[in-house]
Length: 302
Image 1 (tube, rainbow, N blue to C red):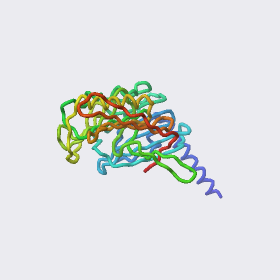
Image 2: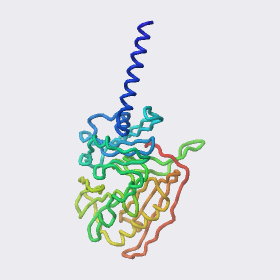
Image 3: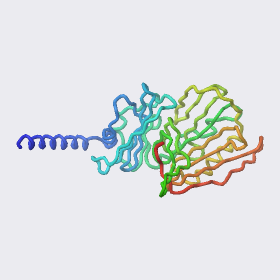
Image 4: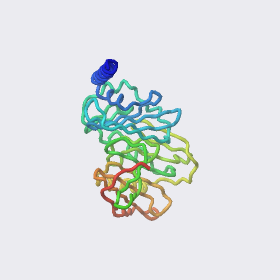
């Protein structure tokens, strides 16, 4: 009996000591500890929204992106811990963060940490730090495919099915997110993460993050010459979809058909919307299709 009481006392002492240790840590460091991130993974980005924390990491040895999500029911107790993993499309080592930056976090209801930005707070997470479309893609240059990715709340690394549960089955209507690409919050007026494939005819893909461009070799594809009309197609799609206040935005341009522009969003209300843009030949007249939306959906892992 005494041994059991002593073991219980020792366990309680250790627990109280651990809680006291956590309580002594800066807020972001504490959340990082609760996420239980292995030492061989480099921290790439951090997002905080009240009791919700996300940590994006990269393992160069396995070329793996991971996203750790931590929700706290109190400063010291975990409500939920979730880990997503996917193979990266580019080497994220140049964006690795110094863990000492976690200590400099200032308490705010919302915050973002990214290497080229430092800590961004509240209204600063607006997308103003992204390069604009016209700064990334210029008329007269050759490309294969162009797409822009944006988020207004949270980090994304993985494609997820957008579904609705019915009485008989689960019905899915498409996907949100792109596998292997880290998307950080913030987009406005064609400012987001632009990904460009086939730069100047080369088999290469470039990811235009704030203040840095990550590149990788991709397969050879047929290229097209980008024009000012093409730029207007993409801008029109972005502006139209932004009006729906998306939580996640994806815009694609691949000139293979008469409708080269395509975009989709997931809104904060769970609506999933799509839009096409078309134009014929070199005409500057752009036709935007009606935004098609499906309501009250939820995300599911694929």
